Length: 428
Image (cartoon, rainbow, N blue to C red):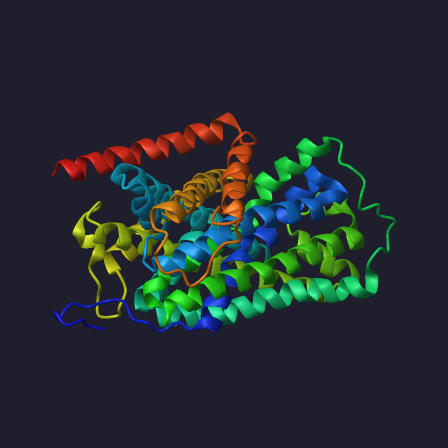
């Protein structure tokens, strides 16, 4: 699609239904299918409570995103929010940069998760399968957002059906074993919060809705609604699935399984085990697709702000930022050669918590610096004080203390690389 100057621009082709499924699709991706077992190994029977705590963290920041997206419906959302609030170009760049890195690392890791499921069913080398998936999904990303959204809609419905399958089985077989859902894990409260830091990966995605705002019809109204709807749907499903999974097989068996939800289904209906694994393939591939989309769109938005080479903002005939699509694909392929799910999930979560902290602080600042700015949605407040945004910022700081030193070292290294890139292009 061309603008008045004859240049190609992003197409506005997404509605509320597509955007809600878009958010649900990435939220209900690899996290719940892969990390529920790891989380059960730490939180035990209280896993459901960790999901509730994680949901509150997501909702605090999610409502900040909902308000800010109505004010500034732009690509590279977090970059724009911090720039509007603090007018600090370096800070804005770093926030945007860390989200690009988080998207790439997460996409690479989830592609390896897909490869594990695929290899289990059909055979083949893990890395080769992961690279093949990245190439195929990058081509879908290149073809255009409408094609990507169609794939996402189909995959989202399939992965939700997989979780509903677990719920249905739970209705008939729930509590076959004696489970005390209020039994504290050996590590006590710290173990539950550590689990929150890990499984929060399962909630990541709602913030990515705002990164395709320029491709949404009536974005100021649609994006905040889609964000809230996708969070509500995902939270309800997570609580149901985590409770039912433990009620059916017990947390010990869930923790030791490489395919925990397949374990739940196949224990009661063995024939459905393969079906559940296939659904997991859709869930993981859908997550990879959306992460690839987000990474390329953040690069596009930062390029438009002239903090990255202007070539990243070039739009091809398919209506997509093709340079960013190619670059994200190549770096994701490289990253897919490394990675442990638990470690990389933590690495991604830390980056996301850093970004959320600045998003919440941006909302606090903008409430008082832009009081007359039109808002299509407003995060709950006491007077004009955005109490949930402040709680969101505080909880992010608390979560910082639950990440290992090696996770922090890698995160700081990524930030330094971004800082050097910013200084280099600013100097030019």
